[in-house]
Image (cartoon, rainbow, N blue to C red; front, side, top):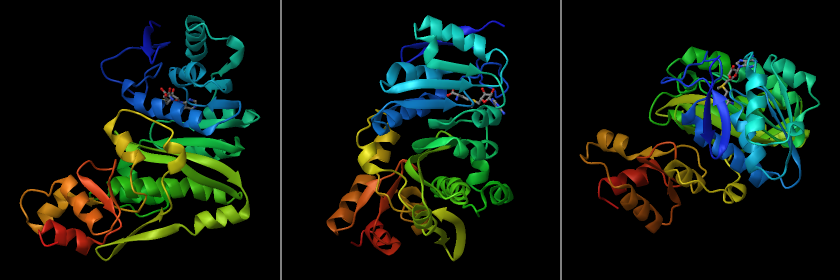
Length: 342
Ligand SMILES: C[S@@+](CC[C@H](N)C(=O)[O-])C[C@H]1O[C@@H](n2cnc3c(N)ncnc32)[C@H](O)[C@@H]1O
């Protein structure tokens, strides 16, 4: 097979270069997911203050693990796996090209669950599948070490965001919302599902960071044990009411550990919004409000934020929707401001 050499953030790796990325590409690499990898590197650097181990059961081209070897000073060992048959050979070549020490890595090419269950566990486990993470969550949760992080990506947003309501109920045990707030409610449904899987074994999973972007959802969960911690999480699973209907249940707790995320920086606009985002459930989209209230042009976001803050409410932009705001004010207050009636 002819693999092309490529670089991401100064790290060389090999992949089968194509115009369009497809899930059955022999060596899978999606350049559009660089932000996802940037954030993973940043989160582990901010989170781990002592040496840590990494387990990547669905490693694709291996670029995520290779970047961790270069960019994470405290990483001790990186175990990577992918069932694609050329995975081990191509990643060995990448390790050589980057002049990394081969002994810092373990490489295998088996089923992801087999890889996880045969291991002694890792401080950081990253589930990065095509579609739903469901089939790998059990093994991932059983092989993440106490005090570590399990990261979960879901790309089946059509289920989580309510295009396929029944699929969401089957796969994520919740009723999805399908309107301008669907990205946040979908993410909170995913967070709850991961937490429920941990809860049955007294494992408490608290989001260190969770976000939705570019047709995927992603959560980094701090992994702890203890009945009380689990009970405290379950208390924050609630239904979301909107226009007389109920959605969810969803995780209503914080989507991030603000103090930890404050240590991270990334130039992407959505990340700036995410970092400074008010951690309340739901948001108001200025475009939707303008059309519902028939006010013509949507109100300028900065004007709305200033008016809310003037009235003593907390308010911020949100990464979920670039034309929306989050606030502690009620919809009635927001409507009054929009109608020019403050
Ligand atoms: C979305 S890609 C991973 C991308 C990679 N983590 C990155 O950051 O570039 C998913 C990968 O999972 C692999 N895969 C899918 N199902 C698998 C399974 N059951 N066991 C092992 N690997 C699997 C595919 O070969 C593919 O490379």
